[in-house]
Length: 240
Image 1 (cartoon, one colour):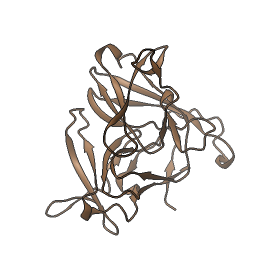
Image 2 (cartoon, helix red, strand yellow):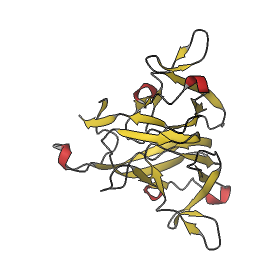
Image 3 (spheres, one colour):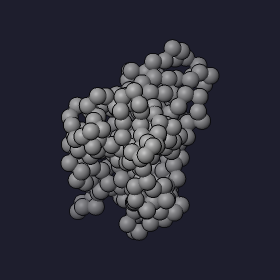
């Protein structure tokens, strides 16, 4: 089983860092959001949970995330259709909500760990403060046929090569992942395919190998799969 070493230098507010098998490691982290568009995910699970879901209310934007400017996050349909099921705005002291009459409060919305959200911000210097418990175990994420946002839901950087699809993720069927421009422009900079025994690559001549592409904490990407039986395995973390 593949594991990644985790140093607790990312603002983890842990009190007991030994015998991690018997304690919960809790903490917080700030994720920077560029002006424009970004796919992102939370990096902590709710304290005391089974580690399989994230909670929207554990993501707290700073004051530059402005409801009145149209800043929001969107959730894609879990069926893979690519449609948006919820658009969530945020107001300090009120929380996450969907604009309806009355407003639909979304703080308790659950997001499968390893999946992400689509973020739009009109302003600059937006940060998300995320807090909770570190999920140490290996994560196997099932994704539907169609379109999904998948991301690094851990508080440490990983590489694309650390994420391993099962055999149903089929290059010949057009399955791929896409990365948005980190400037927030919304354009796609890289399209990555995968072949077992070869790894992640961008189709060029010669192929551009992408195994070492870094996914920082909270980074996410867009996935397309033709199959309904695709799984991504994320590595377990161990404390150094």
